[in-house]
Image: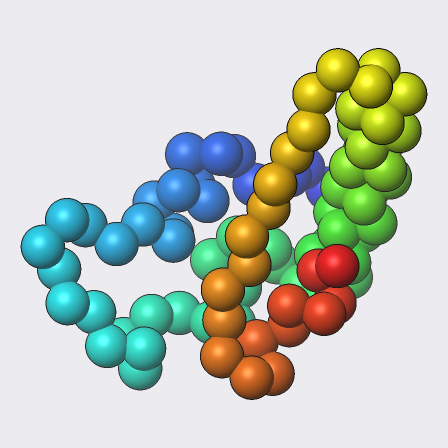
Length: 83
């Protein structure tokens, strides 16, 4: 597996500047700006899922904090897959 994209590159690729009115057609959706191919993206996703699972176990076991995640998206945006 190659390197992960940097947080800076993710932010720059997904940021919408204040006052901007972007049209969905103007935003990249293919992900090639962050991952060189589907295999690399899938490897990073699997690694991230493991890390998130470990963090979730820690948060649950600690019993002191809670986390609320709100997902917003139109139909077929992938919300169920995130859950």
